[in-house]
Amino acid sequence: MDSLKIATLVSLSSIEAAIVDGANRRATFENSSKGIARFQAWALSAYSRGSDIDVLLWEAEPGVGATAFGEQAPAGKIMFRSLLPWRSANGNVSVDYAGYASAVEFCRRFGYEDVKLEGVIRRANGEYPRLNAAG
Image 1 (tube, rainbow, N blue to C red):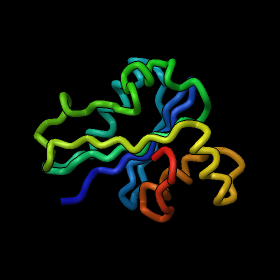
Image 2 (image 1 turned 180 degrees about the vertical axis):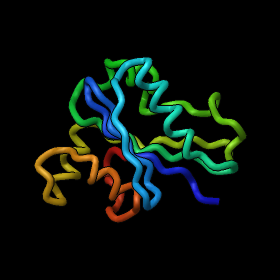
Image 3 (image 1 turned 135 degrees about the vertical axis):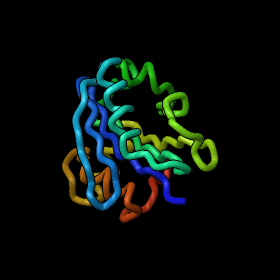
């Protein structure tokens, strides 16, 4: 069964997100408790029964761990399980997490000056190899 792939680029004030499914649906949310709830509801609107959820989480700037998103996603984990309408195929919500330095280094390898959502989406699509260090 396919997984629901979500690419997220988190800054101190916002969460940019894309559901990686060909249609590439995108949205931006506040980096606040209310914004995170909206992000989760938006992501789950694309959820199909039996899927797992794979979240690719990159920090767009340093210090994201001290924000509302960081509090609800300690060590790179953002939990959907309690909100899922059905159990996922394996009960899995996986988070592939890259800190700011790793994300910037990775994007520069492919010609980006800074972290870009497009790079995160391409990585989630499997176009780019995995990072050696974080993620």
